[in-house]
Amino acid sequence: MVTKIDIFALGPSRYDEIEFGRRRKVRVRTSGEELVVKAPEDTVLRKPLWYREGGGVSSKQWRDIIEVLRVSGAEIDHRYLITWAEKLGVDDLLTRAQDEAAGELDPQ
Image (tube, rainbow, N blue to C red; front, top):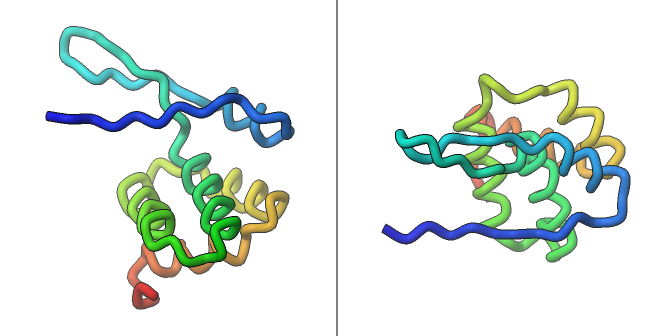
């Protein structure tokens, strides 16, 4: 089995600091090994930034947003999402992704 892990350096913005501070440990094996991963809300917020920076054409980034919303929907802090989506200027993309994840829109 192959597992891909992306590693990113801490950026200079206030959101970068907030995102880094919200990371959490996840047990990956029954013997106790853990990885530190970003919170699902921060994946949902970061991916639209990359999507927009790439001209809004990356189906992979968009698909990732939808899947994180679908898989983590019950545990997501929606107030945090809305607040930061507005600050980051991706609230329109968040709304679209939430609608699509809920099955209200067809994928584009």
